[in-house]
Image (cartoon, rainbow, N blue to C red; front, side, top):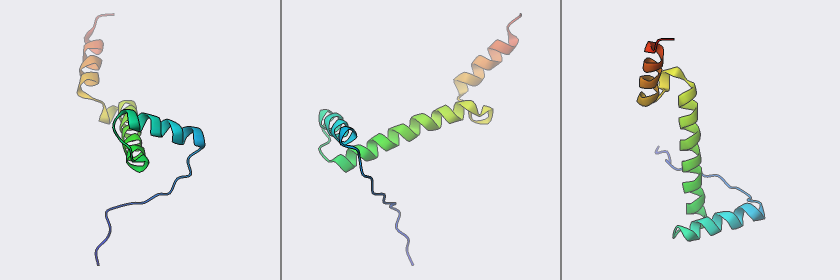
Length: 76
């Protein structure tokens, strides 16, 4: 038995959000609302994931770790 790798959701968008999604999508050359929504969700989750990673000291970015080390070494 094979499993589908696609997960489907159905969303009822408020009119204003649908218009905004269409407007931004069209400006970026994306005329398919579903494709624009997938890109928007992917970007949102990536941004929020990065924010969560920055809150967890075990998942901080290298730059933040380097800055933390410099701060710890700075005489007070």
